[in-house]
Image (tube, rainbow, N blue to C red):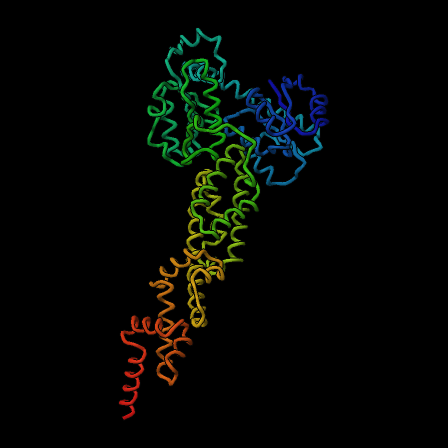
Length: 505
């Protein structure tokens, strides 16, 4: 039986290899890894029977390694080595299927006991597996798994005996993962359906199925139950040679591994559409402060399309970097918290109308894929932009009307006022008409005429009224007055005097 040691300290790895008589208990040290990523890679390639796994590791910690390989179907025994006496770590490790949880420094007696337990479990599983292999159906399924993993090159007789001559003109691998298999539930029903197929290999956990299919792979394997949220599928590109089958299998596994990043609907991944990894993230795409600043600038400048485009670029950057789930969630949450702070600071009226930050963060955490997060934030940011500029529009028009009311005597122009209030002249003119129902010049004329009508009820001379109300000449004043009131200033004064005289009688 093979043993793999995963620990970031070389002295610990050397100690574990030398201080314990592994050969006496039937184990051979087949490899060692100094970080979590190396550990996952070696588990995939070596498929060891027993793994000694440290919790604190660079790149991927022990629990992340454990979770990853269990999800991929690794069924070997795992002993956790940890300096943490925290019950939560132990609880998580046990839930993920470790056989023992030992605290550092390692006690030799405790390690011996854990190794004996692991060996007994492995031997029992082997006996049960050997018994199961007597079934022709199981022999076929194991052989198929060998084909998928590239280990069946020299098993031609076994292949022919199982009617598996691999002479199809095309191949495709479909990985079906069933996370929730309750009795008579959708997952259980799908399991039973998959087990009726001849070209299916079932993982040890009973929830992963690899289907080796022909040219119409995906359509033939489609099943109504695949729409259930607890079921996920990942399918490779089409291959045209049996020698490609291991690569197709690896591609389907990669799709499942990166389901959060690349799945568009939370249910399936078409692996040929996954871009190649890259270290190029794009400027500021990994910094929440920079992301928030860019999005806030789009919000304040009313650029909905630019915000959506930026979020799409951010999605692509995250995909190319292969960021893990926790990193992505933290990135988006921290970015949004900064945006929320900026909105509250600069647009308090709009902030009162925007969905609370806690609800937004909850929604982000509930998203099953990166695409869902980006779509949600695109829609949410669009709503913020609309809300900010509705409130902003209301405020600016109110302020502009107030300014006109106080300064109507002055030679006012929309372009000049736009500079005062920090707006583009053309945009402010359109916004003014949209909000008031009339043009800026029409509104200004009307305000001046109303002021003039009140002055015409006094003894002030016509030219004085014109000047006082901001009109450049008597003639211009008379023309505007007649346009809005229907009579000349003189006629209006005379009519008002007669009305007031008759009222006194």
